[in-house]
Length: 83
Image (tube, rainbow, N blue to C red; front, side, top):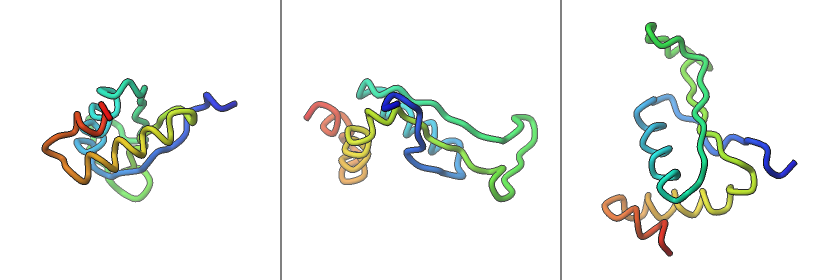
């Protein structure tokens, strides 16, 4: 069951979720974004505003490292991926 999807983090900002997805995918980490939002309606109340950044459990350590390095130096995210 190690290949099951798991929540890496939760954000309430769709744009932030998309950016994090791009960063992780550039490091060959598959990502899914899951949300209860209904697209035409900007509902951000409680859990309906959540955007879950999902990864495979087997990628958790690498994903956390990529995000840690990105947060340390957002101007050079490729260094977090290449190392």
